[in-house]
Length: 274
Image (tube, rainbow, N blue to C red):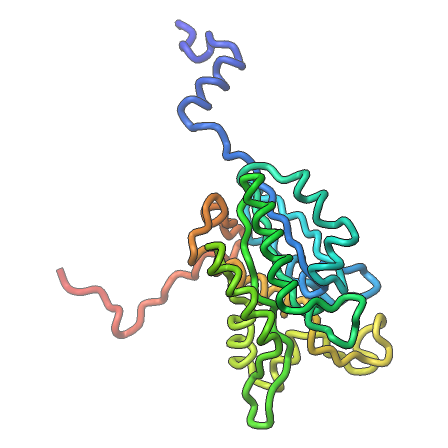
């Protein structure tokens, strides 16, 4: 029997032919995260504290490489002063993203080693944006994620007024995509309520976890659940705003229970007579 024409081709020729029909896989892009402890990777000694940058990679497919450069305690000024920004600029490739969320430490007037006045904060954000664009990357500004603070009536309070406003102003001025995580996270906490929202933060009673034998009452840093919820808010805006190259690279569900169960016919779902 005559050998098929595919078998007569060498393996390399077959591969090239298949690529011609299917197209080459998309180029990998890096998603850099710069900011503070609310985003940063955590060491095992501080678990279950979790930065929202930690679960973020699970929401993208394998063509997006999340590079989390956020660091505990950093403001826009100290992040640059410690030479954490320039290596990112040097490494940026066309099409890479930089997500920029600062404010928690910039606004800390009681800590002069990190404090940055709003005008200088805006100047630093402009630097991050313009230098990212100079390398043909995509900057995204993110307002500082909220702290957990409710008033006596159970209404969530704004905790980053001046720095969220400054972030939004720079976004408008430079026409940069903005994710208003301050607003989105406050709305989420309001849905949970003053008491239930504790589960999103590092709130532990004595004996709850060996890393915190005396407990911890932290309304700034997240639990695993809280970090995932904040990351989901960020991803929802990536999709809603259709960010180029990124919004089409969302991971597809792979778990066995990702498909909804078959519907059991009820009295209102009876098949009609032919």
